[in-house]
Amino acid sequence: MSLPAAGRGRRGLMLAVCCMSLFMVGLDNTIVNVGLPDIGRDLHAGVSGLQWTVAAYTIALAALLMFSGAVADRIGRRTIFQVGLSLFTLGSWLCSLAPSLGWLIGFRILQGAGGSMLNPAALGIITNTFTRPAERARAIGVWDGVFGLSMALGPVLGGVLVGTVGWRGIFWANIPVGLAAVSLTALFVPDSRAPRSRRADPVGQFLIIVMLGSLAYAIIEGPGLGWRSPEIFGFFALSVAALAVLLAYEPRRAEPIVDFRFFRSVPFAGANLSAVCAIAAMAGFLFLSTLYLQDVRGLSALQAGLTILPMPVVMALCAPLAGRMVAKRGPRIPLVIAGAALTISSAALSRLTGSTGHTYLIVTYALFGIGAGMVSSPITNGVMSGVPKTQAGMASGMNSSSRQLGQSLGVAIVGSVLAASMRGSMQAGFVRAAHGGWWILAGCGYIVLLLGLVCTTRWARATAAKLPA
Image (cartoon, rainbow, N blue to C red; front, side, top):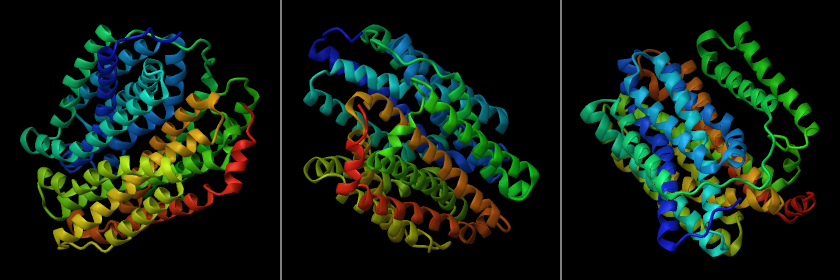
C-alpha cells in the first residue's frame, strides 16, 4: 500500500519530518564523542567503559536495522517511525539521568533500538512520497545533506553543552527534536506498508545479535582480561559459531533476513566492505581525536569541538561533489580519492605529539574530511547497482547495517589497542598508546582505496549482472 497523493507543500513537510530523525541519529554520532572525557571522569570509566558508551548504541542499531525495516513494511512505516522516535527520545532522556556507567550503557542500547527503526521507516516514507525518479533523487540529496549538517554541528553543539551544563546536556539536544517529530508525524504523515512484506526471521535476528555482541565484548574487554583468557577466547568462539550457523541457516529460508547470495556481486560486496572500513575509520578518528584534544592538550569541550570542526565541514562540502562525480564518471575516482585521503591523513595523525601545532591539526582533519565526504555516494552507488532493482530495499538495509557495524568495530578495535598500549595516565601515555590506532585507521583507508580499484572493473560489474532477479 503506497501513500496517497500529496501536495508539494505537504510532501516537503513530510520530508522535513523524516530528516529530523536522521538529524538526531547523525548528531548522536559526533556529539557524544565530545562528552566522552567528561563522562569518564564523572562516572569513573576507563577506556573500555567509554568504548561501551559508543558501541552499545551502534551495535544495537546495526543488529536491529534489518529487522526494523521488515517490521515497518509489515505493520506500517509511520507506526514504526513513531515508535522509533519515542524510544530514541526516551532513551536520550534516560541517558541524561544515568547514575552510573552501567545504566548509561543500558539506556544507550534503548537509544540504538529506537534509532534502528528510524532510517528504514523514513526511507520507506520518502520512497513512497516522492514517486518520480528526479523528485526522489532530490529528496534523498536533501536527506544526505541533513546528515552532513548534523555531523558538522555535533562537535560544536556538544562542546557548548558540555561546557555549560555538563555531559548530560548532550542527550538533552535530542529531546525537543524527537518530541516535535512525533507530533508532526501524527499530523502530516500518512501510514503506508509494503504490498507483500517479508516474513519475520527471529532465529536469524538472534544469531546476528549474538555474533555482534560477543565480538564487541571480546574486542573491548580483551586488553583488561587478557587476550588469551578463557572468557575472551570463549566470546570470540561464540561469535564465530553464531556466524557459521547464520551462514548455514539463512540460505534455507525463502525470505532470509540476510541474503548471502548478494555477496556474489563484487560491487555489492566491495561496497559493504568499504562501508565497514570507512565508517570504522571515521568512528576511530572521532574517538581518538576527542580524547587527545581534551585529555592531552587540555582543551575545553567547546575548543575541542571547534578544532575537530574542519573534518565534518569539509565532509559536508565534499559529499555532493562526490555524488556528481559518481553520476558523471562512476564511483572509481571518488573511492580512490577517499581511500587516499583517509590513509594519508591517518598516517599523518600518527605523528601527533603533546605540542603539535593547530595548523597541522586543521590540515590533517580537513584532509580526513575529504576522505569521509567522498566515500558515501560511491558506496551507495555500489550497493544499489550491485543487485537487482527489485532487491533495493534489502540491499539498502544491509548497507546501513554495514555502516553501523563499522562504527562499532572502529571504536572497539582502536579503543582496545589504546587500552592495551596505555602506560600511566591518559595525559602522559596517550600519544604513544594511540600510535597503533592511527595506523589501523590508515589501513582501513588503504583497503577502501584498493576496493575502489578492484570493484569498479569490468569483471566486477559482470558478477553483478549474473545475479538472478
